[in-house]
Amino acid sequence: NAGVTQTPKFQVLKTGQSMTLQCAQDMNHNSMYWYRQDPGMGLRLIYYSASEGTTDKGEVPNGYNVSRLNKREFSLRLESAAPSQTSVYFCASSELNRGQETQYFGPGTRLLVL
Amino acid sequence: SQKIEQNSEALNIQEGKTATLTCNYTNYSPAYLQWYRQDPGRGPVFLLLIRENEKEKRKERLKVTFDTTLKQSLFHITASQPADSATYLCALGGGSYIPTFGRGTSLIVHP
Picture (tube, each protein chain N blue to C red):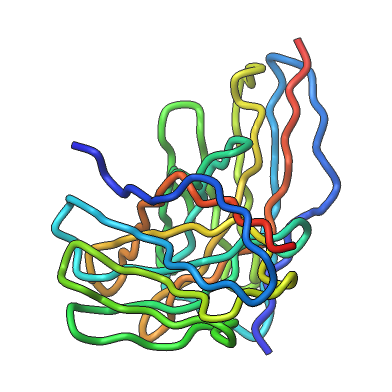
């Protein structure tokens, strides 16, 4: 049981390059999330998907797009990377159950934009 | 706007003592509050959830309290060990809220 997996683990991009961060979960969860974590800022929600086929913006969506490919997979795309997007990105999943949104996190992707 | 406050300064304690971490919030009426542990270079791991109608929750050496009047949760680790050293995050959620995380407090337990 792998839980939540993320690829790649590390990535270096040049300003303007694009890339897609991949996330998959094997817990049959309905909801999936993308966060970024910066020093002193805590976890900030970028986008989330409450169920397959739906996506919604979180606190900091600008510069990102997402795709809920199926129930297992939720990808995050940076179309034109900027140095401000240097961060650690975490994917999470949860069973949509009002009153108990326990989230399970992946190991993170460390992104450096030069 | 909603605000969650956790002490940004690291908490240093001696092994065997009780560690107490605080999570305060404003402009928020959460249905539940969660505590997560995060080790360096890893994703957060869920520890405990307490609902708005619960005063206290325990799990092994962990205890969480939730005071909706004070808008505060306290997280206690009794008989702390160096292995408890990590960053602890609180998160509030419920209803239509996606859980919102505090910035976390670093705990350092000295042998």
